[in-house]
Length: 265
Image (tube, rainbow, N blue to C red; front, side):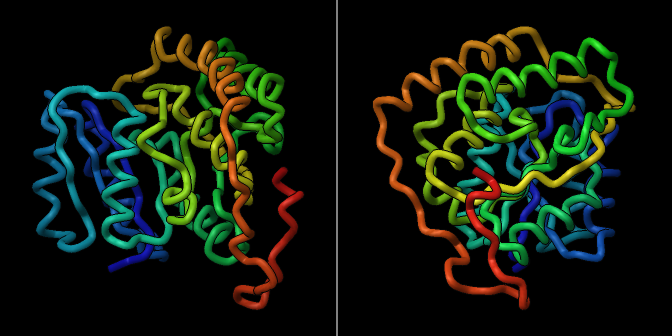
C-alpha cells in the first residue's frame, strides 16, 4: 500500500474524472486515489468504476447517496484513509483547478521538511489565480483577509482546498465535531490544526479555474463561511486545545533539520 492518498470528491465531474485520475497516476511520485462521489446523476461513478481494473489496488471509489456536502465527503475520506494506515492524505479538486503536479511539492513539505499540514496557497506570493473574473478573485482574497482579521491565524489562503495532512493531524482533530460542510469547512480544518499547534506551511501554487464542467460555488456556501468564522472564533474561547509536540522534534529527516514552529505561527 502507498502511504499517500489523494481524496477527490466528485459531483457531476464526468468530463474530468478520467483525465484527473490518469494525470495523478502519471506522476513520478506514487499516490493512491480515492474518489468520493455524491450520487452524480451524470455517471461520474461509472467512469471511475470502469478504470478500477486498470489501476487495481491504487484507485478506489466510495459512493454516497445524494449531495451531502464537501466537508462530509472529506471527513468520510479522512476516516477511510486512517482506517487503512495512510500516512499522508491530500485534498484535491477534480476539475484541474489544482495542478496534480503540485501534489509532489505538498508531499515534500510534509514528508521531508517536517510540516504537519501543507497548503497549496494562491496568495502566499501575490495573487496566483488564472481565468477567474475579478469580482471572484477579490471575494476570495478578501475572504482570507477577513479570516485572518477575525481569527489572527497567520495563513494567507485560509479558504484553500488543496492540502496535504499528516495522519497525525487527522487523528488529533475531532472529526465528529466539525460543524461546517461547505466553504467554511476548509477554514475550520486549518483553524483546528493551528489551534492544536501543528506546523503549517503554505506552498505557492497557481490556481486555474475549471475549463470543463460547472462550478459548485453558491451564495449559501459563501454565507456559511462569512458567519461561520465568527461562530468558530467565539466557540474556541470555551474550548481547550492541548498543544501537540512537534512531529520532528529534535530529529531530522533526509538530513534536513526540522524548522521552528514559529515559522507557521
